[in-house]
Amino acid sequence: MKHIYTHENIVVLHSVKNVLALNDIESFVKNEHTIPAGARHGINNIFHELWILNDQDFDRAVAVVDTEIDNPVARAPWHCHYCNEDNEGSFDVCWKCQHEPASA
Image (tube, rainbow, N blue to C red; front, side):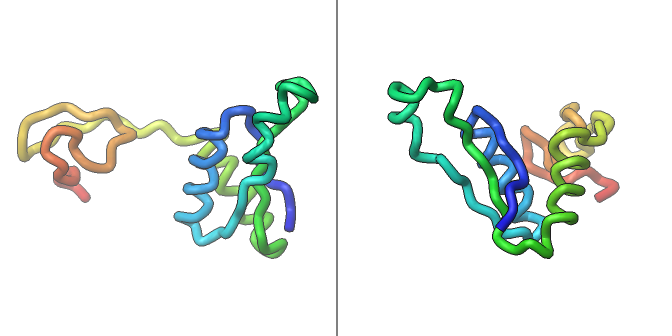
């Protein structure tokens, strides 16, 4: 097992875990249930960590975190040809009608 990511916000950490899972990389959250201990140890001294299970996935996990979390490529906004709605580039489907872009 190897440490791959640390963040103070558990929601962000689980988002990273989900991105790794979409890339077939198994991981788990460490210190997830230590929030109550923060009162005794100081909340800023308790960090949530993401660890990968298989050491051989480490280099690939680092690349995924770098390209999809730390430095994502901004995608251009797109127009839905089904309902004529404008969508942000981060949307894979139209927020209004749930259709994929016509070019997909």
